Length: 149
Ligand SMILES: Nc1ncnc2c1ncn2[C@@H]1O[C@H](COP(=O)(O)OP(=O)(O)OP(=O)(O)O)[C@@H](O)[C@H]1O
Ligand SMILES: [Mg+2]
Image (cartoon, rainbow, N blue to C red; front, side, top):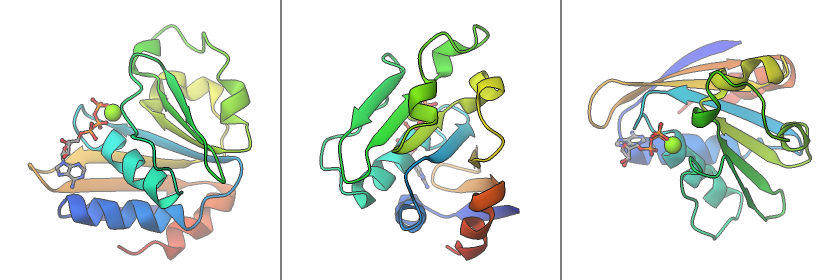
């Protein structure tokens, strides 16, 4: 299943993330790609808030992984720095874990990710607008069908 959505501003990004947040389940894998400043971390903050996380969610670029406790924990990864060196960390337990796993720059570890996942590619249209290219396999297909921003 594939869908494209245009996000007009940050408020619409928030609504989109809240929408996705309704469908998360243990083992949910959400993969984000897009240029610097496209909105990957911004989206993750909104998703985390929807999941009930009250802690400040920051970009995990220098730590690779941050874990936020909630009813469903959020595993927030940024694998930007793993480019070319593959899966050098024990990330599998989170990718295949019982929380919600969000991976920024997932193409860097694409060989280590399962087929079944939700992929969102964010393209910058202008300062506030984003084009989202959303793709889902398996149990993620019906989620994409339901999403209408
Ligand atoms: N519609 C929008 N959706 C998301 N962010 C937006 C939007 N409009 C403007 N922004 C701004 O764009 C920036 C996005 O930054 P963010 O850190 O989320 O990007 P990123 O994709 O995680 O970048 P990086 O690759 O550096 O991790 C923020 O400053 C945010 O306020
Ligand atoms: Mg980021």
